[in-house]
Image 1 (tube, one colour):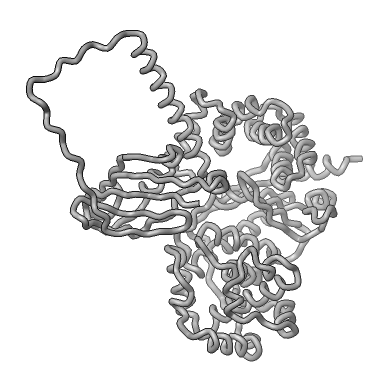
Image 2 (cartoon, helix red, strand yellow; image 1 turned 60 degrees about the vertical axis):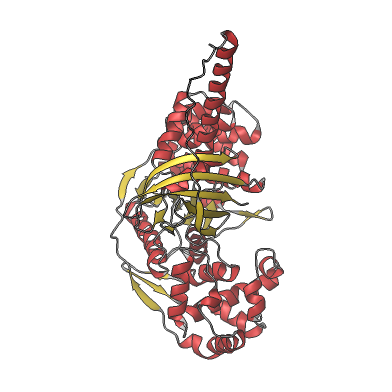
Length: 523
C-alpha cells in the first residue's frame, strides 16, 4: 500500500504561472488556472480601484500550493500556540518569496484571510507611510471581495463586524486616527477587535459615502507622497463623527456591492507539469519561511534523494546551514549561483560570508542590478565588492610607492591657475520615508523633482540607525529624464550605490540642465 507521501507525489502536479503568481496544483490544470485568474483579478482590483499605478512587486512571484491531500494539508497547517490550526488557506511572508497555501477541498473563492493578507502585501509596496486605520481598514474592506469569472464585487458586509459595532462603543475619531502599531487598540485582542471593525466600517463609509471623491484623491496622492487625510476631508471631527455613526447605524446595510469589470489584459498564463523534486522543494520552502527547520530539513533530504544536483535546492540547503550552523553554506551557495532566480540571493549570502572575489558572485549581482532588482541587499553586496576593489587598489599603490622612490618633480616656471569650485545654491527640497533631499544649482533655479521615490534602505542599516549623505551631480534632459550621473561623495560609502540607484530613476520637470542632489538617508 502506498504511503501518504508516495500517494500525493503519485498525483499529477501541474504548475500555472504568471509574472506575479506561481500556482502548483495537485488537482489539475483547470482548478489551478481558476486560482490564478482569481489572484490576478484581485491584483488588478487593487491597482484599478485604488489607483496604485506604481506598485513595485518583488523579483520572485508569490508561490501558491493548491493541495487536496488531507494528510499533507494537516502537515502544512500553520502552528499557533504550539498547535496546528486547520484553515482553508493562509499567507506566509518569506525572506526570499511569499507563499499561499490553499485547500483544494474548499468550495468557492479564495478565503478572506488570504485577501486580507494580500492587501497588506500590495499596500506595503504602494503606500509609504500609511496610518494604521487605513492599513487595516483597506485590508478588512478587501477581505470581503467576491470574484467571479470576469468581475469583482466589492463593498460586501461582514455580519460579524456589524454585530461587534452594534454592541461595542466606537472609538472617538481623534483616538481612532491616533492608533499605531504600539497602541493597545492594535495589540490587545478585545480592543483590537473593536479597532479592526471600526477601521473596516470607516473605509466602507469613505468609499461609498459622501466623501467618495475626496477619499479617492487622498489615496491617489498618498501613492505618490506623504499627505494628510485632513487636507482632503476637511469636515471638522465632530461633524465627521456624527456622519460616520449615522452611516453605520442607518445606511450601511442599504449600500449594495459595487461590480468592477476584471480583464486578463496585461498578463498571460503558462502551464507545464512539474517533477517530484519541485513539489518537495516548494513544501520545504514553506516550512523554512515559517521557521519549521526540522520539517524543512526532511524535505530537502528528500529532494537530494530525487535529484542531488538541483541549484534551487542548494540555495535553501545553504540557508538552512547558515541558520543552524551545520554544514558548509559556502559550497551550497556557490552551487546555487547557477539558478537564474536565486543566483543573486546566493551571491548576497556569499558576500555576507566575505567571499568577495568569486567572479560568478559579481556577475550575478551586477546582472540583477542591471535588471533593476528590488532586492536592496544586492546593492549592498555590490558596494561591499567595489569597496574591496578600492582597498586592493590602494594596497597595490602603496606597495608600488614603497618599492621605488618617486621621481623628483620640477616645478613649472609659470604657476597654473586653479579652476575655482562652482558655488551651488539650493532651490528646492523634499522628503519621504527615511530620506530627505535638496536640489541645488549654480544659478539657484532648476527642474523640480516630480517623482522622487524613496531609495532602498536595507533593514540591517535601519536597525543600526545608520545615517548617510550622498552628493550626486545629475544631468537632466528636456523631457525630465536623468541622462547622466556623477557621484561626488558618499558617507558612509555603503550608501553610494543605494543613492545613485534611486536618483537614476527619479523624474523631473521637463527642463534640461545640470543640478546637484544632496540625498540624506534617515533611519
